[in-house]
Length: 88
Image (cartoon, rainbow, N blue to C red):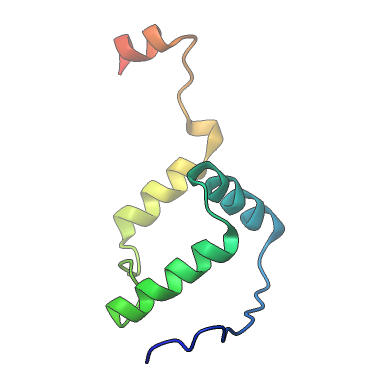
């Protein structure tokens, strides 16, 4: 249904403050406001008639990889980019 000129609706969302700040940094880098980002997301939902990104429950391999990535103690550390390139 086409949008009537000048007619808008307010959307209120509760979101973690850290997530909001992180997303706003990204939006700032690409030159759009949070409002514009949400409007674009909603437009994509409308165009796709669903979420514009694939949504799936991760398999066991993916869950293990995510757990490993979140374990900072298991991360390899390198003294320099050169060392990383040589050992990777």
